[in-house]
Amino acid sequence: MLRLEPISDPAIWNQMVSSLPITSALQSWGWGEVKRLSGWQPERYAVYDNSELIAAAQLFRRRFIGPVSMLYASRGPALRSIQDLPRVVEVLKQQAQGAVYLKLEPETGQPAQQAAPEFSRMQIEETIQPEYTIWLDLTLGREGLLAQMDNMHRRNTKLAEKRVVTTIEGPEAFEEFWQLFEETNRRAKLLQHSKTYYQTVLKEMNQPLGQAFISISRLEGRALAAGLFVAFAGKVDYLYGGSSRENSNAKAPNGMHWGAINWGLQNGYRIYDLWGVPRQSEGSHAAGIDAFKEGFGGSRVRFPAYDVALSPLYGVIKKALRWRKNWVNYRTRGTTRDVL
Image (cartoon, rainbow, N blue to C red; front, top):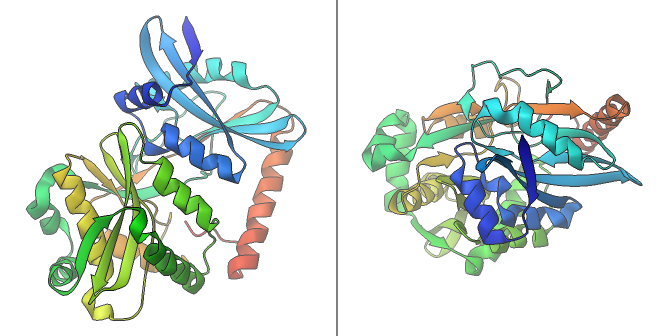
């Protein structure tokens, strides 16, 4: 018999989430506080099989009309094993309270070419977070990571070490990061949250057992590339970044990533997540981003999403959300195609 227990203490929650093999920074307490800013309400539950913790589910509730809502586990739930997911879903259904469906994205990190596990009464659907990413194995060490890069990327990374000064900083570097981030999003026609949202990420993801930081590369004191990173449960995640087109021969984006990678090595992390590549590069709006990330080597991994329908309204709501996303894509970039 499984038992569900609500958790209200940040330190206890993060200890639970980080103790499970399948886990993510987006299941941490801090991420729940970040998502409040965009209308998602976090609900946090530990799931026990007798006395053994088998899952920790941070569910985000988004209300549509009145009690009608959805529940979403962003890169979650954290699990002991993917095979526990169907049993965990059955107890999470007890918290539906008007939810039309439950969307789950457990961070299994399975090879991209591998078929997603299938479970009865759970549909494999499109994700909210990027479905594909690239993981670098930090246990290879500095020389091993350089060796797995393609020749041009290795050359550019070594050039960046000589040409830019890369530092790991906190809120004091936020304005420089923000300027580059906005510039890049305008250039690439990408959507973004409010400035306050990213400031909140930097604040709230510095939490029990987790850290947030900015890696920034400068040439003669001028910031050319900056990224906002979070670290939790053995992984360093690259969430947001931007760069200038000035002084491109300085290879500042390589320097910015290499600085964060070296921070991860020095602090004992196991995985560096480059966070989001297209499902297929050909014809993608993000093909250039994909090519840059692929240059680091590593492994392309996939995080499948599962939908659990809880109401006859499921099909209608899904179509409405897809229509809205298509419209936002078209308004922003002139195409209904998703970036990733």
